[in-house]
Length: 416
Image (cartoon, rainbow, N blue to C red; front, side, top):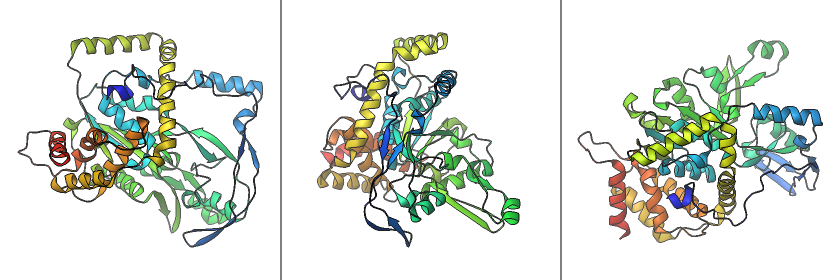
């Protein structure tokens, strides 16, 4: 495990990413349409043939604007580097696998207070790759997938308009515990709708989190009505806001990451099952390791910028590993014999539903891609299967053995 994500682990790619990815010249993005029509929920979308150049708007700023943007970025609260986090390999691996394959379904992190759960999740921001989005679209619509576009962008595509594109980093949105349903889902201006006859919609946090990450700290303390909203969006990939007979829908596909302390209460089974993986975090017991953690945190608090610079090279290596793994994920194969054994483990553990089978297959392929391989090995499955099934087992109140141990015992029984 440490060989995959530890701070001293070698990178799987030979050449490091350049320290500066910005160019002084305006970059050009081309977006191609193939001839024909594509159906979107029964709507025929005309697809134009041809190419057009889109200038990256971020590079066409005046020197004053560029300097102001740089100052604003530097004045932001510095984030603790992901590569500097000591230990907690299980939690870090689950987060990396979800970034590589968002369809895994997110991760629930449960553990003692003060073990770095929130720090680790928020440190993921620096490693998130870039995605293509439509300029000015509040829903981060995917320009290559008409089925996951916002209504306005889809209408432009139907009318044959050219879509201006740009690239942006995957978004991470914090969902505060005290947030109202309107803040999460968005609001409709009823007065404007009645007087002007237009759907005036103010997007909420779910719109901002589309194609990104939605992080809920202390998720086990979240209000039930917000839990229901998250369940609906996680199940359908869409958020629907209805007020006074007016209904508006927009895409809301996100990686759901939650953290919490089990002493403060358990999650509803419906929400727990929505998380693809489950990571357990414990307090570090090794005295030398605890001292190292304290020293590293003291260095960061004393001079955050200098501390981040010292880990810049390792952060770049991790970013390249993630980018390479995302690019090669579609070519990773898993033998049918291994898939049968995964399903046999799930069946013998009495796992309800098929989400456990699906998530284990996806997580094993993502781990193989992270290691730079195009074939899943049994050790990949052994690494991820406890995190994929542990929270799906039926709980026995008299059972004192950790559920992850039960999963790994059944794995070796089936695979050997």
